[in-house]
Every structure is written in structure tokens, then in C-alpha cells.
Length: 438
Image 1 (tube, one colour):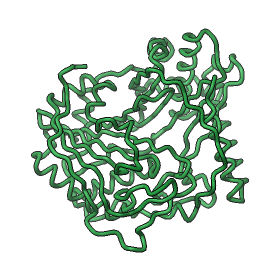
Image 2 (cartoon, rainbow, N blue to C red):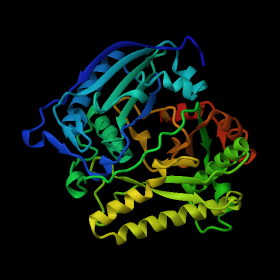
Image 3 (cartoon, rainbow, N blue to C red):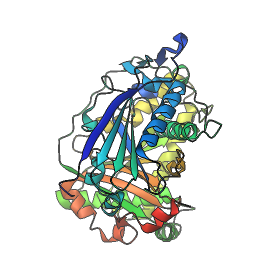
Image 4 (cartoon, one colour):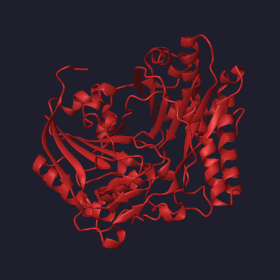
């Protein structure tokens, strides 16, 4: 990375809702899933090419005004956590930064690595406490060429990716004055799944190690070949299933190579529960409604066949769905959810991986009035054994973000099987830039 690259903060303020939150909505009850959710911030960056962006003052005015109006609809996001189960909807607002980046957007596209992207994310985001900070943080990064990178960070404590997707696209619809909301948000998860007195749970603090993140691109033709290979043994494998299996297999192989042995290994796959629970929860129910199901490796022979990993993941998902639907009493359902996540809390002497797929959430439709984004990226903040999948701009490929221990990453990114189907951190291509103007 260019050592002189830096973000100069040119303004900082709190953006508050355009209208005050009604008294009867001043206290927002979080749901059980939010009660047990991590407080980490999840950052996304939306890039807009220079020839589609208006001048900076217009961008600033439009973004802040439309954000203020959006927050009046998403009022809990402008509040502050009162405790683990309550948000004080006090309209304090969200932090809004503007920065000047001393390079052209083309430099970012030629060097789209984790270190470069971190420049565009608010300082010390991984250390921010949402009990003391705003639940959403926005940073607008202006490049020398006139292009822009819009960074949106939201606390997982109060929002999953479905909520972030809704929030971003509602904000964009209001900014471009489309005449209609993208979706009308509901904040009723707390009444559907009320919090409980949690049982005493042990948490093992993982050893601190240096982690490295990599962006990995799987284009449609390569995914099609991978699916055709696995389809010989598994019926209709999905692109998410085959890509997850290949990354998981490569990560396990790297860990085994470094440690010279295979520890007990579990992949925890995150799942969006809105359509899974009974009765289904509407998509406009905002908040965090996610669960995880474990995919353990019971025998070393299981890591050698991709089809076997796909089969295990699919079986784990089916078991999770079937078991969750059997839990007709809410307390039983909660106990089941806590049991599924037990492995994340008890990670000593194990290799624990977390995978979350955002495929299907088309973040590339976020048009604030100057066209759709050229590129949308995500950043993993110094975390270990994390796999995040999002759609490529075309919608049929997958952009994966993988974070591993530094010595394991060196082995992982040279894996021949992985490299046969993927590219490690390629530049953002001219075709993507041209595509954003169409």
C-alpha cells in the first residue's frame, strides 16, 4: 500500500432524524436474537465513478438531507443502546464524516486490498463500543478525481444484512426523490421474539493473532464448471454451496499444513431466518434475525472431497430447518438457537470458522441520484477464520472475503485447487467501471 495514502477529515457532525420520534416509540425493545448478537460494526463501501458524481457540496447536502429523512423512518438507528435489550430512541443521530482521499479512484481500483480499503473506514471502528457511539456511522470519501466512496457501518447488535439492505436502498430512494419508499420498515421483532433472562454462558477469549484478509473473485464461468463437477454427486448444487465448500476445504488444508495436524473443525454457517421461522416474518421487519448452524468435520477423510463438504452443509441446513420448526414453544426454540451457537463460544483447541452469505442482496441498485455504484466492497476487521460472500456486480459471480491467521493465509492463497476456480484480489476491471455507466 502507498504509505502516503491517507484520509483527511474535512467535516464531522451528527445527522439527526428530520422529525422527532413520537413519545410512544421512544423505547425500542430488542428481540432475543439481538440480545445474543455481537455488537461489532459491519462496514460496506459503495464506489461511484467521477463522471457520474455531482460536485461535492451537492453530494454532501443531498446525502445528509435524505439521511435525516430516512432516520425518521428508521428511528431506532438514530438512538443509543440503553442496555442489552433496549434502545433509547432519543434522536441523538448518527456520526457523519466527510474525508478527502489524496488519490484518484483508479488507485483504489488497481489496489483493492484490505489495507487500502481500511483507509476509507472510520478510524478504530473495530474498537468502537455501540453503547457509547452511534449505531450507524457514515463516512463520505471524496477522491482527487471527483469520484466518491460512501462507507456505511452498522452495528450487528441492531441490524442484520436484510436491515442494512433495506436502510441503504430506502435512503437512496429518498435521495433521488423516486416518489416512493423502497420498503416501509417495521420494528416489531421485540414483540415476536422477546428477550429472556439468559442462562450463564461461558465465553472463551481466543488467542490474539495477526490476521490477513483477502478478496477472492469467482466469476460465473468458473462457478459453472465447479457446479458441474459437484453435480455428479450432489443434485443441483448452488453457487453459494460450491464456493463455500471450496473456501472451507482450502482453509482447513492451510490450517493443517501450518499446524501439521487437524484440530476438531467446525464451520458455523449464518442463516437469515425471516422465511425460516413459523409463521414467516415479513421482509420489512427490521432488526437482527439470524441464526447459525454448525457443520463439523468428524473425520479427516471428509475434507478431501468437495462434494462431501457440500453434502454436509446442505444436511446441516436441513436439520436446522426441521429442528427449528419442531420447537413450537418459544423457550424450546431459544434453547435450540443457543445450542447451535455453542461452538462459537467454546473455541479452545478447535478451528472455528464463520461463514455468512449476502448473495441475493443486490447492493448494486443503491442509486442516490448519480447512478448505480461501480463497485461495492466489504471489509473484515482483523477477525480470524471469517468467510463473507457477496454478489459481483453482474449478480451471477461471487466476491468472497476471507480472513485467516497470517501464516495460514500464505498457504491458503497458493492452494492450486482454489486458484483453478478463483482470482486472488484482482483489480476492479474496466468492464465493471463501464457497466456502472449503463
